[in-house]
Length: 330
Image (tube, rainbow, N blue to C red; front, top):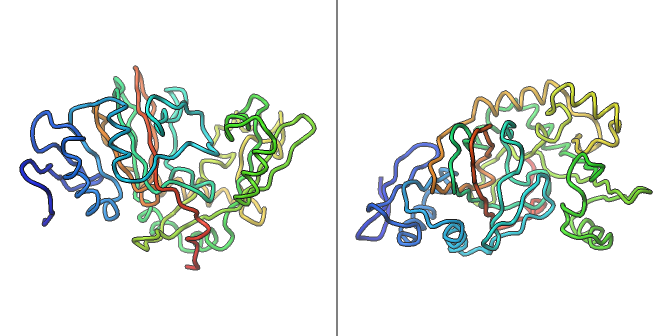
């Protein structure tokens, strides 16, 4: 393999998925080898989709923030989020999804439920769990290829509509999601992004947004499976929770759900196929404290396994794009 790196201590690159990059000398930090590492990223990220930097000296959250920011794109704020997170020390660095340790998180591409998302995402393992807690990944190009062509076409043509109800103690409040307590700020945000929003008599909010089901990478031109239908749909919950929610708030009041873009329901067999393909494509690797995983967010989906013991993984995102500018017919 021909690869340009800078002397005297080029990193060691091991092929595989994710591509694994180790330090060229014992005790080297990410900052010390940044120019070498940037060369690897420039050459390999859009081909491999995922790069794991492992074995480097840990420099904590601040060092991670500097490393992610050094690639030249301002780190993004977590806006219009769908899961609870907290900002940590270091601008643009957030906790990973704050779900209970016993829960798994399905494979997904970050913010694929909206028309704005980050192209790049980094995960830093500040502390690996005693057991479990891996961050499995899957190649979204391979997922796209394995999905039935008729289903792919349906998702491309009909697109998807994500419906969210905020608050009621069932999900994030609109104040948390939009980082404001002003109705006018929410309305301006939604108007700019083509999101329908309605306030009910109690001051609670409902949004609807029609976005992509598949997408084409702007640089590689690869088609990718790019949505969170399987995650947002009611069927993602266990049957008991589905029944409780439907009895309590009805379908219209569900915290989140997803339909085809014309409002018609997604088929259960289609969702089952999607979940089966994602399971087939999942690749699991162990976290080591100090590891950094860098993903092209359109090319690679990520998830989380349940865990025991303390676990701390933080996240940074950069290079936001507007998906409406990427959509072209298959």
